Image 1: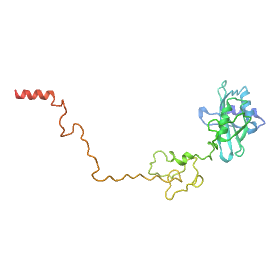
Image 2: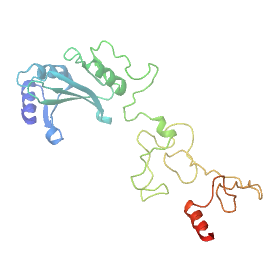
Image 3: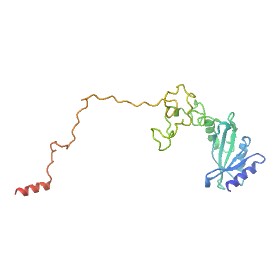
Length: 253
């Protein structure tokens, strides 16, 4: 089935639930993409798995996308090992209470993916038996893949992507910008912005050049001559070449 046919089949299976079908980019790797409401999330995955024409029996991956004020898109990719086609299913949950039903009962392999999505985005999966941390320590606070999460390492260290390729360190034609994950001066931390020009990573003072103390006159140690330099006595075994010796003996005979 083509991606368009897969999308139409999913929409027909979900009637009367409102679903919207489209096709992702990727040319030869394009996939049917179907948006469904959160209340139909688990039923949609079950219908796509059990339908004979779709038969998407292989769970590939599940994650989320932070859409800021619009909420979070929970995305899952399924694949049919029989018909060799795939489908992307999406549902959007509100930012204030991001909750959707777990699909572990439909695809047991989704357990770890839901744990990671809960950990990184703060999305709750009702019905999941254990949403314990998977990648971060238990005492970690916050959800690192949310767009408002402050990446402290980018505040303390210059961001390598602050300049476009080919622009020198002395400056280019672009205005310095903050890297992703770094708030504006005064929005994070207690160190005020310094006076004067601001370099990469606003709010951090520019590094002052190190000054090397002047060396007093006459303090430089004498240089050790290299072996074989002009004026040095020849080393043991050095002498004229054998051909030169023969020429000298022939001349004195």
